[in-house]
Length: 143
Image (cartoon, rainbow, N blue to C red; front, side, top):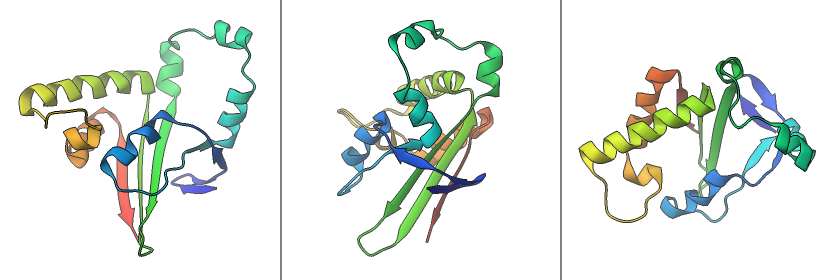
């Protein structure tokens, strides 16, 4: 279970692609990813027929009504904890905004050579601050 701004949410382990890039730029011993339990159950129930029936792109109303949340928690070797979350709507539209802003920053500011995680190529807080103009909210706290 994790605590969110809406209250406690039941989660379960789930392979998520974002976990792949975390160890590239943060020294960690272990990365675990979870997803809401009810969403994991939906994925587990998918059959090829259901997958084939889903439109490639949701309609505009469904996109506008959707909400997403990404939450990260970290515990240091000394026991200190940090938590960060990012939330917004229309994940499809936000993906486009993120791609365009990333390209704009690369063209305007450059980045170190090589394969980089986004947090290595761009200032994370500055990037997230830009996304707030598109309805994204974010916060990082430590304890």
